[in-house]
Structures are given as C-alpha cells and as structure tokens.
Image (cartoon, rainbow, N blue to C red; front, side, top):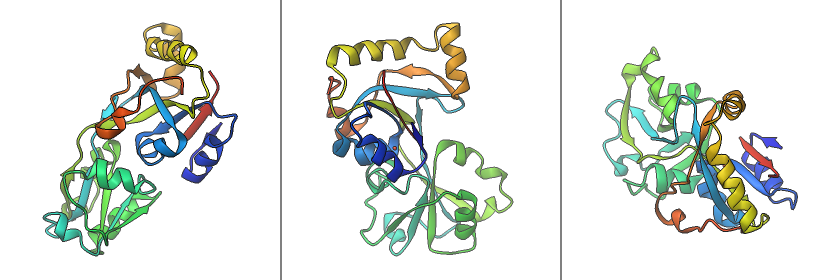
Length: 220
C-alpha cells in the first residue's frame, strides 16, 4: 500500500497488517524509534545512488552561519522531519531553537520566496540541488551548507512482525535484485537499480538487524 503523506504512512505502518516499510530516509530518522523499524536494505535509486547530500540554499549574502538563521524558516520536502533537518542534514550547525521547519510540496515556490528576500531558506535533496543552476533567479541564491552523505531510502521490518530467519532471507533476496535481468526489469519500473546493506549514520546505526519516511508497506 502506497501513501505519499507522512500521516497517511504512519497510519498504515501502525496497522498490524504492515510488516515491511519502504520509506525515505528523513521519515526513517523521524519515526524509526516510534515504529520500531529495523533496517534490512538501502535503496539504490536511479539517477541518485544509495546516498545523497542535502543542500541548504539562502538568499545571496544573507546567511553566513547558524546564528544568521535566527528567526528564519527552513522549508523542505523533508520538513515533516525536524529531527532529520536539525540533526542529520544540518548536523554541522547548531540551528537556533526559534527556527521554524516547514514541510513544502512546491520547492520552486519556496525558492522564489528565498530569492525575493523573505526570511526563508530551503533544504534541497540531491536532485533538486542539481537543478538549481537552471533557475532564472539562480544568481540571487547561494549554497550555504551541505549535509554529509545519508541514505536515500530504507526498507525496514516494522515492529518485529517478521521472524528473524525470514527477515534475513528477504534481505538476501533484496541484495540479489538488480543482478539478474528479471530483477533489473522490475526495479527499473520503480526507478531503482537495486539494494545494498543498510549504512545508517550515527546513533540510528545502533538499531540491530533482527527479526524485530512516499511510503510503501507490503508483506514479504
């Protein structure tokens, strides 16, 4: 079952029918503990790869460090995950407590707000950042910070709903996808190239792989 919203995804993953989750990394960061997500594999996304950097963009000459963001709003498609924004994407800076974090669907509109001089900065994923130079107002914008590399998307077991042996077998199957023609064709239709072992940064990496955020839930 697919759901493109955070709340819809949470509702589905809280259902006892949900045993696996395929979620963007910001969703994983925000909800892994709450949903008891155990990572099985990391997606290799066509055109992006297994990891990506997020990019903070501000009005040219306005933001020189974390302190400059006082009173600002950070807009991003990952804005539903303040934990990701503050402690993963922007971990190099101590973001002031009064900075608002806002989820947005229309990144172009948010970038126009930045260029017009509003107290807004925008956090872009790798694909969005690559398109930045093509904007007619790109000269008014400046990249002020990039994140460390983080996963793009994670497949995880939900709340210990898959026995350990079956989870390991499913993981092995995922890692083989993309190496055979049949698997590659299936993945291509999903804009994926395959899966690799999960490489979760920081404290989240301490979650063990046992049988124990667009969102997909399915049964293996």
